[in-house]
Image 1 (cartoon, rainbow, N blue to C red):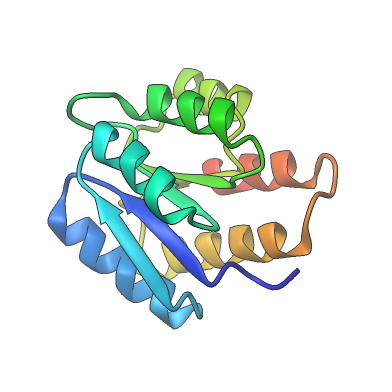
Image 2: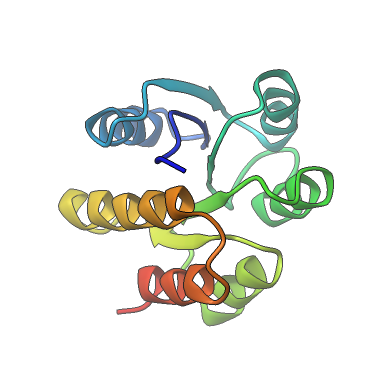
Length: 143
């Protein structure tokens, strides 16, 4: 399976949405939707069936971890990449437990964020590989 061709960005910071759109375009993702809060994210997933979701955790209305849990409950095979400023081990572990394919710290250097998203998209495109997605999430969230 190739890399995802479309994505949903869920972030309430417009400048982050602009950055992620640009990075996804560079990485070959041709269609991108966005949502600024948890409720809108769930509506967008239902309306568009994205191939991957880039999800912030600090969101209005419904928090990102709750959104992640609901997405995975309703669409267990939909890959979710957490893109967050939260870097606590507890938050990282909870996102992984809920099924996040990767965890990227959004305020790292643009080149590093791009590289981590690219690696996550490659893993998603490669399909299920057992522990590889979990290992990749750990790599993306560490350092």
